[in-house]
Amino acid sequence: MRLTRAEEQPLWKTGIVHLGLGAFARAHLALYTEDTGTRDWGILGVSLQRPDQRDHLAPQDFLYTALERRPEGNQPRLVTCLTGVLVAPEDPQAVLAAMSAPTTRIVTLTITEKGYCHDPATGRINWSHPTVLHDLENPAAPKGAIGFMVEALRRRHAAGLAPFTVLCCDNLPANGRVVSGLVQEFAERSSPDLAAWIIAEGRFPCAMVDRIVPATTETDIAEVARLTGFDDAAPVVHEPFRQWVIENRFVGGERPAWDSVGAELVTEVEPFEHMKLRLLNGAHSALAYLGYLGGHETIAETMADPAFAGFVRRLWREEIVPVVPPPPGADLSAYVAALDARFRNPAIRHRTWQIAMDGSQKLPQRLLGTIRERLARDLPLPCLALVIAGWVRYVGGVDEHGAEIDVRDPLAEKLHAVQQAAPNAPGRVRAVLGLPEIFGSDLPGDDRFILAVTEAYAALMEQGARGAAAALAG
Ligand code: CS2
Image 1 (cartoon, rainbow, N blue to C red):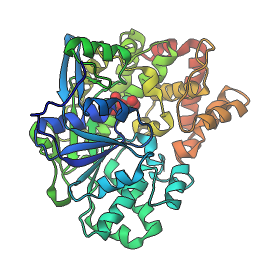
Image 2 (image 1 turned 30 degrees about the vertical axis):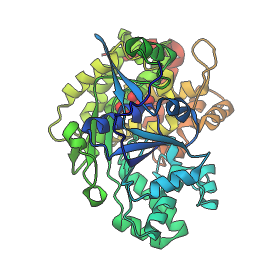
Image 3 (image 1 turned 90 degrees about the vertical axis):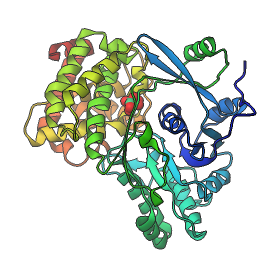
Image 4 (image 1 turned 30 degrees about the horizontal axis):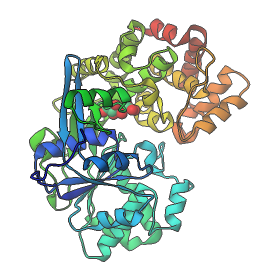
């Protein structure tokens, strides 16, 4: 049976425009918003690239199922707070109109790290990025999120409206500050007045978001149909855990009562971000590269292998926890124990290949910050070095059995080419670690770092990922 909105069901009114509607936002932002039950904060989704979300959701009145997967069973739930989905390349004017509407008070974002078209090492705009170049030339019909926000803010300013709050829900450090910097840099180019207004009146709260949401599969779709009796073309699956820590800075103080349903509204998000990006996402990337090379398809499978579970526990305990300052009231060993259990949840099939994507955009905030802190204190980093070596091997494009790896990364070609041009293994490592857009200007010149990764890479080539991880497992 098809999902349809019942006549008597009251509709939500759009208060939020969400750029980059994907599974994560539908299983996190949307569920928190749904839980508040305040129907004037409905979410209008925008796809910046493909029409598939709209094509799946429109025929079912933008309703969908969120399936919570626990080791002991699954719980489906209907989500009703989506008010529509726009596909930006088809109709950029409709997106700009929605963002400039007086009723839109918040613009939320999950466009993934690479969607910001910035240089991950510096957090500044990449002015040679094709999307940025396009949006500079065509400000009234943009393609990228920054272009859309600047043009919509310009229209609001011209119309005498307040700006919307920009709430970033991507895994970037100091995400609100980074986005605010990018929007200002971009606005400066066309109008210093507009940039000044955005600085004065705009609000870009930082936020830490957390929930494990693997890509939906055909098996999930079939299971939802079996459990609910509805043919939902776009369900989302998620773990039970969720966390959202948000800096409480909204234009006019206007926002849904997310704090009444478990979100933490705080004055300082950074320690929560560090904890999450470095302990959760850092370990996720570690397991993704090494687990993939070791022949494991999912994180849960990788964690069921004692070599990798032992490795990641030592990575947490000895190399990350000692240099992560705990946020107020947090107990890092309890946090790590909870992560361990979340990663082991066998009901969540989160593919190592999915997490391995876009490593060039993820490594800086997930692993390189920790590496820098350890180097500054002259502390050893054998586990972190093996993770970086695993990534170098992964982006080399050939697995341990000689099969090709489908490497998805905006820098994939470059990462492959610099390795091809190197004469030998140490040369490959040095060439990749020399890329300043990932490793900045400091790490390429730090012999302790280069040497540690070169040694780890040699171990990886000799013993394979499993052997090398087992040798370090604690
Ligand atoms: C993952 C994240 O795909 C990835 O890179 O590490 O999506 C992770 O599952 C979430 O950040 C969990 O909150």
